[in-house]
Length: 274
Image 1: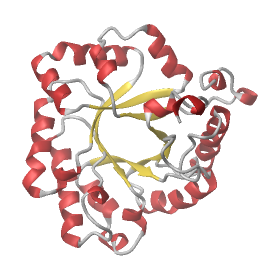
Image 2: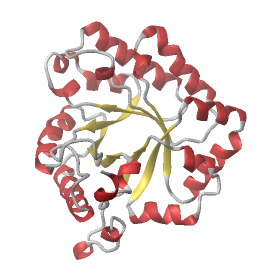
Image 3: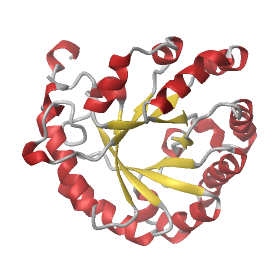
Image 4: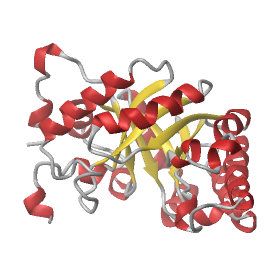
């Protein structure tokens, strides 16, 4: 059902290609000979950018046997699909653990990723609001990672850090630009494109030196107000076109990134997964 919704666009409208978080990449990378049907699936889903998470075991495997990961990355590039390295352990915010992140980045330098994406969320280890010291530690981790990365660096950020007090006075956008961060995925989880656009517009306008994607959720564990999981694939597709159209007035808007791959491919089959 989900795939059929992408078979034909209404009025010949071509959807903008999307990015997607892939938190469980074990099967993809283990099978270095990914079948052609997988790349056809991405094309039908209008996805041209994967953000691939590697767990500790996968990182060790890549270091010991690089051929599998290199083969997957080469195959992706041959099919016009960008692949970022996705890393997201919140303890790396603490100065005592920051070097662990830098070591991982250093150990994977030889791999031909298209970028590095950091989904390191302060909310997972701190209570709101963050102290200035906690905020500065978070930004310092992002900056050190960007400096260590051989690939362009992007991050996932909740909009509060651009919009709400006290953070708006701490000028996150300016700090990220100075520290070499090229792009931000704004995590505005809402199934109302008008609400999402209303939140996103002033943030994009206020940080013209950054590129922005808008992160949207299809996770079934979230409420229908936050996630498209309970909506039809056709509704989801129409909402993404609507959001894209509303954000097109911002020169630094780069489309949608979807959380997450496993849930996206199950849309339209909720009775089988609930």
